[in-house]
Image (cartoon, rainbow over all chains, first blue to last red; front, side):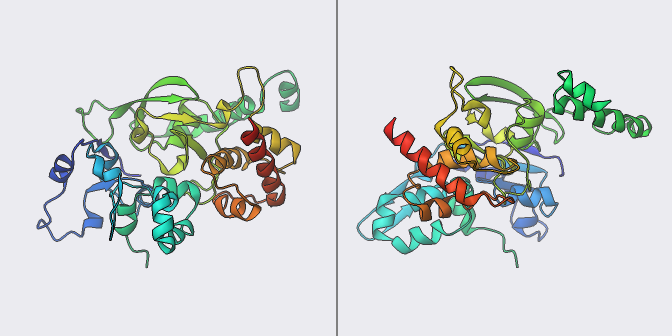
Length: 130
Length: 205
């Protein structure tokens, strides 16, 4: 695995500031030298395989904003924080009652351990495998 | 030669480590000196070691680790806790399962540096101070829930997570929520029986 610098920003603004300039060099985000990591279930595996070779890893788990970890239930919507884990969403009693299909789809994805690690935002932004 | 030494009190691991070192010594002499030598790079260089403070089985550890070190390798190679097993090393087999802040995760897919300040529990941390096995460990013994035993530490840590999460309600539930732990010996029926027993034991306690 390529050696990398590891950083822990404590705010969304600080994390965003580390991101590469999207206009620079026409490199797709998945190939950028700076990569964000949350659960790591996908990226860590790709790094082991040499598919991803970031030289700088930005850990999002230290971001202080509480909303990133919250599941907020409203009358007509459920709002998931980006760092909510798949397992937390699947086991949330309100999610299970009001969106059983969503809870079941999470439950049947991956394994208990992976669901405890994988963030919802990372899941949505997962690099396509095919 | 090896049998006699093992019988005289040398552990199998000590013997294997010594043997591997002896075999590895030859090529190392001839290899490049620059490989893996600590460099005098400026702070913040990719090869710098990071200071990582974690608690493992209620003991504090201050480690200096390459950022690439997985939590699994930190436990096994840096702390010497080899109970946690390396199976596939790609998050597919569950052999490396540990608890991080009480939740079961795969230590092979977690960079150790990302666990700064967290509480890790491995299979070595389950036995009580009086030397009593954890109910899940005892249940695995009672039900013969293994053959070769390689997947067992991961199975046990995952079973504890499964029970704590409230997902051990039925045999079907256990099979579904333990699906991240593979057993090539196919001891699954006994593993399920063990978890049912441990669940009831933990509920009574």
